[in-house]
Length: 130
Image 1 (tube, rainbow, N blue to C red):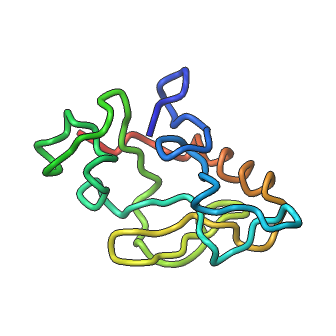
Image 2 (spheres, helix red, strand yellow):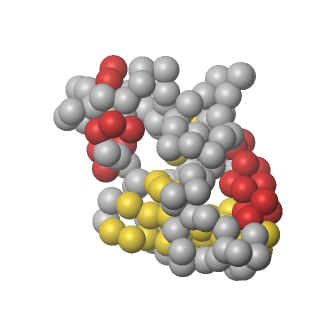
C-alpha cells in the first residue's frame, strides 16, 4: 500500500493501493449501508501470498514476479492466525481462501462508518517487509 505523508502508516484512500475499499470490492446498498459477508478490503496472510502486482518490484527476491510500485510498502497487522474473527472496532476478517480474506463490517452499518472504521486502523499497521 501507499504510505501516508508521515511514511509511518498506510495512506487512507479508497483504492487498490490504499487503506480503504474500492466500490468494486464492497459497494453500499441502495440505503447507503455496508453489509457483512459481501466483500471488503482484501488482505493476505503473508507477503508471499500477495498477488505479484501488489508486491513492490524491489522485493522480487521475496516474491517471484513482484511488479508493484517501489514506493509502496507491504503492511501487516499483528501476528494472529489468519482465521475468521474480529479485526478491529466495527470490523471482522472473513477468510475466503488460504491466501485471501476480506476486512468487512462486522454488522450492517452506514458505508461511511465502515470506511471510518477502516481508516481508524491506520495506526495498527506496521511495515511487514525486510
